[in-house]
Length: 349
Image (cartoon, rainbow, N blue to C red; front, top):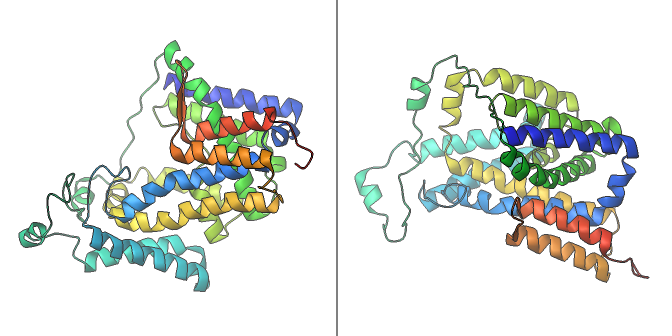
């Protein structure tokens, strides 16, 4: 947590650098040829999580929670309803396609009797085919019953640790790059340049202050949440005030213990079906970033940058630099920035 506080302060420092030198420096360092494929990597790296969950497994695929056939039915209903409501919905339903998909998936789970499996049903599964089988994901109200109506989080305060700071702060450079990519993605969706208004220096500062404040109380770090880009694209809810009220509502709802218990009862395939669409939408936003910029991907320089970003990011390349280990989206972003700065502009670029 000490390292996370320092990471938030790094964001604040970066925000003042942008404030002094202007946002043009970011456009130079992070042009569409870098941000486009990085945004694509965000969606594509998350794709296996969606597939695992839609298949009835945990997000990392380490254990089975729901039989695969049942999971596909539930995830398919949730996905289909979300798409249909977003396309055909009117009035209020037009604004809540994701919630509609979750409700449909939840009721489908009830109809398929995910509330329990008989011994004969469990015996029908081949244990050899499911080596990491744990138990079916049950829709149980037990957690709702056990949870109190009013619950206060357990606050934990950071302890000074220089090693933690040296380890985490360099890593924070990668999500800072991702932050810029996410802001561009949201701008591309809504048709507004958020880099200029409210300004990338302000969004970076807000991100950093939120992360440091959360770590001071024992919470996880905050970041621009890539997954929400897909939700915003689907609902067309572009007004930042909506996000403000949603955040306030989320804070208040966090104190209702029974609500948390109920949310935990939602079967994994329901959210898996929704995430198939949302994570795919993020990748499409990245493609659209390149298309809108008119980037010629057959130019050798552009081809090299995009290709390396995609393979490093999706392939899981990691670099262990003693005090910091970079991998995934962060490494893809850093490598993209470096390649864009060092590769010479060709005559046909």
